[in-house]
Each structure stands twice: as C-alpha cells, then as structure tokens.
Image 1 (cartoon, rainbow, N blue to C red):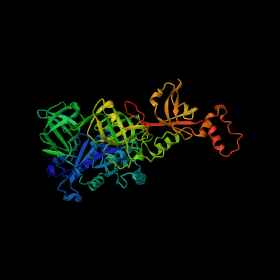
Image 2 (tube, helix red, strand yellow):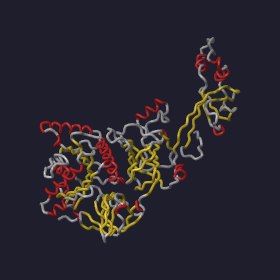
Image 3 (cartoon, helix red, strand yellow):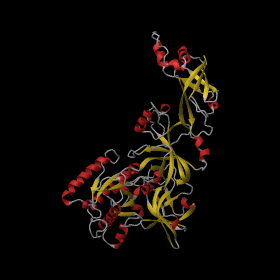
Image 4 (cartoon, rainbow, N blue to C red):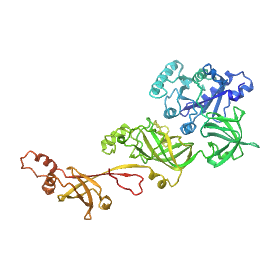
Length: 577
C-alpha cells in the first residue's frame, strides 16, 4: 500500500451550468474508480471513495507516462465548483491549484450562461481542460450518434479561439434516468472518461516556498482533540506545531495534528488537500474562509489593479460604475476608475505586475477598447484622440466594505445582479491586485500620491478688441466662476494668436486677454467690423486675398483654453505644459 509521500494529488475542477449533472458525474467517477481500481474489500471501498465536503476523490495506480516520478498512486481530487463565486474562491491567491478543468455540458442544451462563464474563468486560472457532454441518455436512440457529433463540432468551434482549442470531448451519461433513477442503473462512458483523465494527468508544479495560505471548506470539532479545518493549500506549506492565523476571527492557533488521506502527517504543501487540527474554537464561526501564516494577509479599503476586460462581457466598463468585486475569499461591491499611461509618452514595456507611482496617468471615462474609442471619437469626447490604444490599463477599486486578501491575488469584477437566465456573461473584467490600501482614510493619505490627470478643454469667443494687445472674451466661464483662479493661463485664438488671461472684465463672466505679440492685421479687421455688419463685410471687394477674410468674417473668433488637472489633487491646481 502506498504511503502518504507516494500518493500524487491531482486537483480536477468540475465546472458547468447549474443542473448540467456535475455532482452525479463526480459520484459516478468515484464509484466506478473505487470498484475498478481495487478489489472489493471494505477497506478499498473506504480508501477509494470519500464523498464528503463537496470534494470526492478516487485513487488509481500510477499511469505509465508518470512511472518514473517516485509516486505509486495517483489520487484525483474532484473539486466541485458550484456557480462562479465559489469557483473563483478555489483559484484565489493566484495559486493555480486546479490542475485540470472538466467542463460539464448538458448535451441537450449546449453552452449556457454559466458554462460560458466557467470557460472564461478556466482561461484565467487553468491551462488544461476536457469537456464532458453529459446526459446522452436523454437523446433519442436513433438520433443519438448524430446529436453527439453535432454537439462535439459545436464545442470544438466554441473552443477554437481560446487556450483550450483542441481539448478532448467525451460523451457520458452520469446518471441515466435522472436523479430519481435507481442506484443500480449503470452510468455510461465513465470508464472511458477515467482513461482520458489518466492520460491527461501530469506532474503539477508545486511550490512549498511563499507564505502559507489555505482555503477552508469545512470545519468541525472533535471532543478532547480540538477543531478540525479541512481544505486545500493554495500557497506555501505548513508543519506540525506551526502557528496559523484565522483572519476572519482575528485569532492565531497552534497546529496540533494533521491528516492527509486519513493518515497522520507532519507537513503539507501547495496543492495538498488535508485536515488540520488546532486548539479548540467554535467551528460555527468559520464554515468557509482562509487560514494563513500570521500577518500574511492584509485588510484593505481600496486597491490598484492591472485590468483586462473579459471579451464576452457585453457593454462598456464605465468609470464610477459599481461591480461585484471578488478578491481573496470575498465578494464585495466596489466602485471603479480606469486609467492608463498616455500612449505618446510611454514605451509601454513596463511589467504590469509593478505599479509605478512616479508616472503620470490619464483618466478614462471607461475601459478603452477599439469599439469604445471609435464611439468616443465620434462624439468628440476622446481625450486620447489620435493616440493608439493603451497597452496596459489599470483601475482604482474602492470597496464598500474592507476585504481581507493575499497580496498580488486575482481580482474578478462581475455584474452578479444580472439575471442568471438572461444569456449574457456576467463576468466583466479580471486583473491582479498590485497595491492594497490598508488606511481607512486613504482619500487623504493615499490617493494624492496617484497622479491621474484629466485633460480639460474649454471654448469661448472674442467679443471685441480693446486695443492692439488686448481683447475681451466671453462664454468661456459661467457668471459665478472665480476668474481669478484662471489668471496667467495661456489661451489660443482661432486666428492663430497666443494669449494670456489677465483678469475679469465687468460682472457677467467676461474677461481680458493679453496678446503678447499683438493682434494680426487680418484679426483686427475681423474684430473691428461691428458684429451686425460682420457677415456683410468684404462683399464688394474684388481683391483675391479677401476670400480668406470673408470666411473669417462669417465666423466668430474662438478662444481655446486647455489645461490638465490631477483628479486627486486637494488644491485642484490647473497645469499647462
């Protein structure tokens, strides 16, 4: 019999739309495997199937292609991932503990909302997948083969543009006759699926270094022993007598004993599934959650993340919009603000895993894609007109309540209030947490360090020339604006002259502009024609150059004021380059 160190644990995430038959499939796999892989004595039943905790596992002899690895037994742990929130939980901390994804599709329905979402998350979190077409027993016998082939082709097409292109697709009936059928009804296609799983197994990369973090999915107490937490190690390792922290309860506990595969062990590492017994606490307080090395998680009120839009999400991602943000083990509401490095100033080679507070960033009304850029430019709103799409985009997240999470963990933003039955992907964006803000008063202590600017563009008109070096302008400011704040800022006239705002003129929002190099003769001519007669000017003239003036005459002289302002500058200073 294999000892603990000779058993290779391989985590398979079982994903799919609700009612696609994930649980029946896990049960069928475990049952078939335990009867096939071992003789039918009670002990082998016990060791072949442990269907508690939403995790079932089954062991098989080591397949030939993994023969020289030092392991004697291959244990498949099936991680049933109901819905997407808990699925994200199994892949938090950026720790890729799911080694293979099994996407379960109801063959009578094909891809559904959640199956598409599972595919999205799979692409973020996992590198290998097999597709299981379940419920083939519901297809009419005479059309079964044709229907299976049609659905297989459809799935191949769906996977074509994903990293799972070419994945194996296996038809099965995990529970012929549905949930009500007798237990004795045999499943179809499960032995073939087990062979496929064996062929796809590989030696996963596990890293014992890094801080210890474990996702707990079950918690119970044993009289006289302590409280047992079972779960999967997401990163790092743990040993007997270590102190571990339960952040949700703000307590640190000592590891008294540990078990893996029903056997006592002294240490465990990333990817292992185990039970840890610690000094007593009330298990009701921690049904699910995280356990970690003391002080390795932080509780944050806001964060800066690198961000990528999920291509299947319909509609724009707008700044100031609220999303459900899944970070660490929690999902909370949060508000977003998108920004990027202006493409002209950036070689765009920096690593997205480091955030540089020394750089200047441009505020965006939304996450920029080809479509939003075209739309903005059509409306004439785009501050990035003429620039290429930014290579990297970031977001500031402000949470409605603080979240506890590991540093550099995966973040997913979704619209979970969208109707689950409407056929749209609810996952909007994903990214990596680069900077977490622990200070509750971050608006004063942290945000001013973030140099995100808005380009401001105001337009007014010249009312008249005062003398050769001064004009009076209007319509640039509201009546109540304090024009004093704008004194000294440069403006440009549509006739080409540069000017500087000198101060207000009267009480109605008009202002004086100094033209350091003086007005051009043509401009003076336009401005000295009384406005009522302006459009008539130049009619009787026959000189060729006057054509240009006629064009000017019929149009007022515009004033343009451009400046930038940092979004988080408490003094709201206006800056011109």
